[in-house]
Amino acid sequence: MLINLNTKSLREAYGLSLVELGKKDKNVVALEADLGNSTRSVLFKAEFPDRHFEMGIAEQNMASTSAGLALAGKIPFMSTFAVFASGRAFDQLRNSICIPKLKVRVCGSSAGLSDFGDGKTHQSVEDAAIMRALPNMTVLAPADAVEVVKMMEHINEIDGPVYIRINRNDLPAVTPESEDWTPGKLWTLRDGNDAVVFANGVMVSKALEAAETLSGEGISVKVLNASTIKPMNASAVIEAAAGAKGIVTAEEGNIVGGFGSAILEALRTESRGPVEFVGIQDSFGVSAKNYDEILEKYGLTAAAIAQAVRKVVK
Image (cartoon, rainbow, N blue to C red; front, side):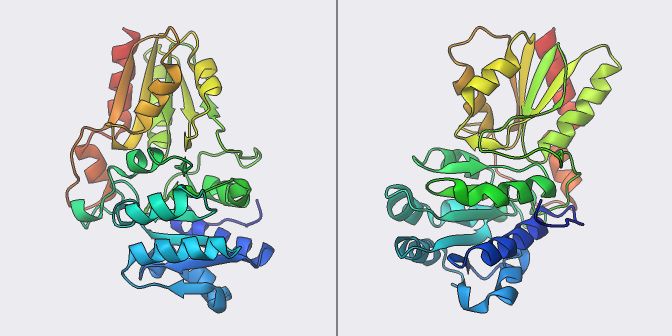
């Protein structure tokens, strides 16, 4: 990694990585929608004030300006909360960025339920489904700060627009620091024979916890971090699922049209065991006292994954 990372914060890892990209390429620019202290694009502003553009609370204008900068040869990184990036700016993302396949990078910060205190208006339960439905858009959901850095090191090698889902909270490190990242990579974090769990984001560490619990029950679980939601590496998914008695997908988002759907699309022509989705069951979020409380409410826990595995293997 280019960065000596001493944080478990995905947001901090994003901001530090953005600065490193700015040092490597003078065409990298950053745009912000009045949330730079939260998204951590403020770090880029401090280093390159003439390449940072504060757009105010106007995500639509930020997306349109990003398109113009991309057409002028710049590589814009536009950052805001995930719910605003995918919702408010959808028309501009679709028509001005995705249709012409421009090299714009969209940081959806405070993704999923991770902005636990601000309630449903600030929680992006549907952003992964929205963004993966856009032709030409790459969708990434890193599991920890280490993976954020690895993704950012290679993000400008990806043709066309990219959406990266950044959690607001510190997450445990699960990504092998010695391995390189490429789009579509499946990280095998634990091997097993009975069931396979495909997860991303915060749910990766939950899946590993569930697998450890189930090992005490004699159930062997393979855990994979599928952090590239789109394009899904179908051949790798098929290979990973081969021979499993059952499959579980785990995501911090609405199960309707989300990550689980993407996994099933990859497996649609294959003979396979039953599949269970662990995710948000088609509802909006709520305000909570802390992150663990809201994850518990919506069943985004190691216990829920363990129960889903028990169901599919039996």
